[in-house]
Image (cartoon, rainbow, N blue to C red; front, side, top):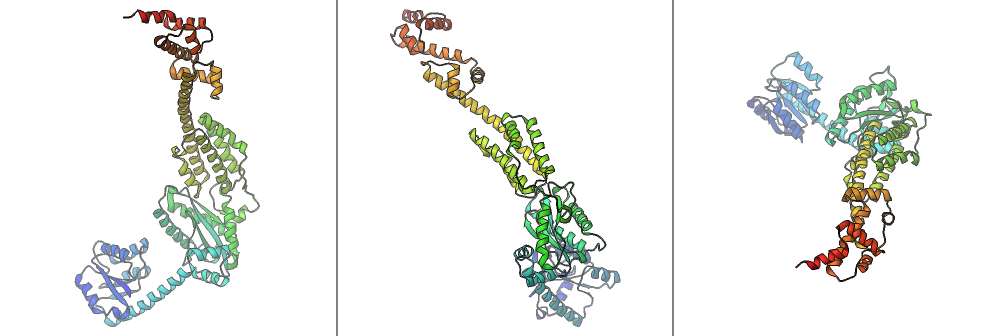
Length: 524
């Protein structure tokens, strides 16, 4: 059964429409009613009817405005029949423009209504069959096989005809690429896909435009030269105008690029156009400007698929470890200038950047840092997996490098604090042994000068002074708790010379070890 919605601001008129005709006899079922155009628009988009029978003059939204809104919003594709008491020619003219199937004047003639429903039944049935045939041919797997050369010739010919193209005409495969979409939600992308199909149809005049979604943000289609509206224009002019229109559709949220394979004749050569469109895309980072990239204008201009040499990254990684932002920016500028001037293909750029990113992550992990602390890492990875302009990629890379450099500096600071605590614990456990700043630095693989500065910064005293006070503190404990002789205590706290021990003890405590012990004994 075909679903029907009745729209009229007079309830009696809707009741009359229900009772006047045997709808079921012709395969129609009235599923809903609406009292004005605005209400009807919501009902139509919710129920997706096959037929809408509407009056013209209604409050809020009249019949013609309703039809126009349904056509523009593209949420449903019903057939329309207007039933009105106004026979003004301008209404009928506008109705024809909107593709209305029939314009019936009130009072309704029963035979005329019967003829209209019989004709509509045949038309809607034919449309359903046509949509089913299109669905069989125009779908992602079949289209993929066609453009890659894996589809049988007969089916390829059927597909071309389903698209409204001539199978012996000049055909060309194009890719529309929407760059820098990481912040654009999927529902917006879905709407853009519909808008792209509409823009293509407007320029080519094709009755059916199938959009082949290669990946998120990349849409492919096939156009025919003899169907172009601008018949006197070249493919280059067509591509330029299409890119301009698509740029206007998406605004500033995405950067639109268009790539065209070679023009071919015959469905069997479409895979060659598809392949060469992919080759044109490889030039996106090396081609100047943002004009459409057509294969014939790029042929013979090689692109580089190899990664950058390791030496190029050395300066950048060093500046990251040294936390030198200005130096890092200069290194990044040089890297991205090379990507552009040496015409690196997108895959080579992504591999080169990934290697650099992994090197930075390895530095973080070697310093016992946590890579999950790098908030820019996942967005950069996601960006590299979707269409991106070179400036967009560079901006994201700069943010990652700046954050990584600051994070590494912080990890180093925390490690230094942890390291100095370990050294202090080592000194407090081995103060009785022969040790010096140089020997401790060697034990912990540190520069002696840096270790001395670190000690002073963290504990307010230099290493030798800290060691002396540690030894004197332990000597005082032994003087209090044992009857060991002074030379024995000197040996136990790390002094090989008892006289030197006495001198150093007196320097710190302003009394000799014996005087310190005697003072304790004198107390009652």
